[in-house]
Length: 317
Image (cartoon, rainbow, N blue to C red; front, side):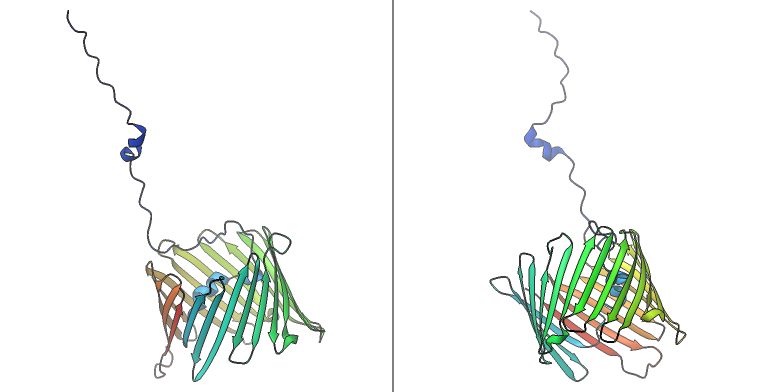
């Protein structure tokens, strides 16, 4: 009897335990440092001190022309102990700080070479989500103590502080708006003299890669406009500028700055202002949270003056 014709072979389905081997590999993840998003994911406009902060950090942070050494260690119960020493000109300033966190309470105790003992107690989520309470008590001058309350909401950020004495200085600031655009004011009132010692106002605009802000400071005597642009998030490349106009002296100060990551552990920054001061730094993270930073500053209008060099070493386990 003749055999029946064979049917064409069907494409077999791979067994389940081979499916992962036959599927294409996932795309490679980008390497190198990556900047944080300019638009926060779960926050509102922030506090008044956050207006223009990105540009200020770009133009000022880590530009030190002194010598600084910081060492942090941790005890078995989780307390962090930090010792820091700074040499500026011929003077040396040192301090030691202990920080202990327990649930939503943080206690900081700092002692300095100026015979000052400063204790700060911070309580997060103080009864209401987004509410923070901070109490600072210095010794021996307890009259300089201060109590502070911060509240962060999706559409507002409020900060209020007052001195712990009979005639305190009261400071109140508020920001209202969204993650993208916000307006705020900052006012200080001295109850001892009955005068307003400070009243400032600010406007902040945030895009996916750009932040622009304008602030009116010094009781309306100066106007500052700042700009921060994240050019490349993968390389943490950014540029920024700040312009300050003093109405009383009729003078302008313009500062430009930039930063770029050479590799995942090394960042360079540079800045220049209209007074002729040029600065540059290189910062290397040789282990997680441990940095060495080398800074130099030159007066381009007086090259006969020697340049300033700063060195900072931060060690954390």
